[in-house]
Amino acid sequence: MNPAISTDIAAQLIALLAVLMLVVQLLLVVQRMLLTSIRLFAVQSMFLAGIAAVVAFFHGAMHVYIVAGLTFIGKVMFLPWLLDRQVRRMRIGQEIEPLVNFPTSMLTCGGLTLLGYIVARPFTSLERLGNNTLAVAITLVLTGIFLMFNRRKAITQVLALLTVENGVMLAAVALTTYGMPLVVELGIFFDVLVAVMVLAILVYRIRESFDSMDVGKLTQLKG
Amino acid sequence: MSSTAFDFVLQTALLLGLAPLVSGCIKNWKAKLQNRRGPPVWQVYRDIGKFLRKDMVVSEHASWVFSYAPYVVFISALLAGLMVPMVSTQAPLSLFGGVLALVGLLALGRFFLALGGLDPASAFGGMGSSREMTIAAIAEPALMLAIFTVALAAGSTDLSHIVQATLGPAWSLLNPRHVLAFAALFIVLLAETGRIPVDNPATHLELTMIHEAMLLEYSGRYLALMEWGASIKQLVLMTLLVNVFFPIGLAADASPAALGLGLLSYLARLSLVAGVVVLVETANAKLRLFRVPDLLSAAFVLASLALFSTFLFQ
Image 1 (cartoon, rainbow over the protein chains, first blue to last red):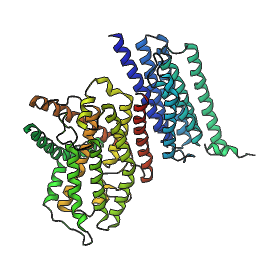
Image 2 (image 1 turned 30 degrees about the horizontal axis):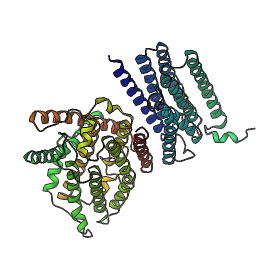
Image 3 (image 1 turned 45 degrees about the vertical axis):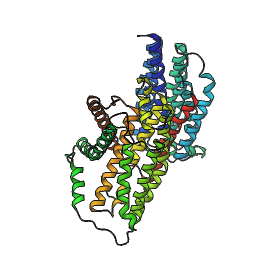
Image 4 (image 1 turned 180 degrees about the vertical axis):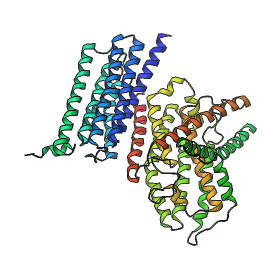
């Protein structure tokens, strides 16, 4: 294949998958069913794994394949399975009304996306950067943080943390083209994995002690 | 000039003939997917034929608006359909403003549909009209923004030009702003055609109905026109979706071979979209009415992001 054309295709594919990640993120903002949210997160991670695979394939970077594989096993299969089991065990299907209502939070996230695009704009002229992948990565981090403090259920907050991490990984994989050193990526990956497992246990404990996952109740003292 | 007239006749015939078939196919496939036998695909033609033969009962409180509304709804949908390229890249009718006129015609139809619901002073009709307008208030801007995104990329608001511009390099179809606009337009399609997350086309339950509530007082010929008009509007929106975003195989000239190929590819893409609609309808439950703005605000934000990203990366 002609190298110029193949780079072009790679850039298009990465931009497309990145925007799909953004779309899933925005759907996550207006989703109130916990199980569907977990599935949406799995889909978003699958797009991330796809981006890693595209980068690995078109730039011949072998260790990025490992990142893609780990993302797939960890974030598409294992973590959703873990959270899924957690939600089923606690028998809570729905998120309660968030602090900011859904249309407003959707518009807020639209604004945050715009902010992400504007912040990323000076960098888009740099060599080799996927045209708006950086913007999407920044947006994922911003909307993830927004989602984290907007929702009251601890499980959704864990999911929000995971989407923030997806944003960081997206920036790491797509923007540096050859990825960061493998050790760093493995470090981030296992960090999050362990964090989520600990959080899952913590959520269960919160639920046991307070009969609710509403983190607003954590301010009450328990004798 | 004769080829223009031919286009005109061909597209009118296609719109009139194909629209009930698409509705019938969706009904039939949906039933099949849910392990029911379902009505045959031509049931909608039979329904319309039967309505046309039946007598009308008109409320004594109804004014002239009630009897004009079906004609306006039907003709505005048909005119809007003539402005969208269907089989060839050239649409037979191109009014001032192109896309704007299209959205305006659809809005005109909706306005008279709502008036027709209000006019006979039945409680359900007014409720349906109010709901329809609530939904349209968010769905319409999303529709406009999504089409403007494509129009900006093509540099023209004329739909024929837009289609010709997107026919170019195949990779531009995967452009991020196209994806965002496509997602927004698909949600708008579900809302505007009264499909399941927004409205249930198969029920007359008073708590949920929107479109059916406005048609409750209509009967006979008027009801036939209303139903036919609604199915034409659905076909127009689907055509917009398949031809603006995936104009593969559209006839560039008026030769019979090119037209035949264009028709085949058009039907294939149309049935694909209909299939996706069937899947969405089967996999989802109807949203509560007060949740519908959540979904539509998602469409609105997607469409505005599509538009903004066009400007940010010029």
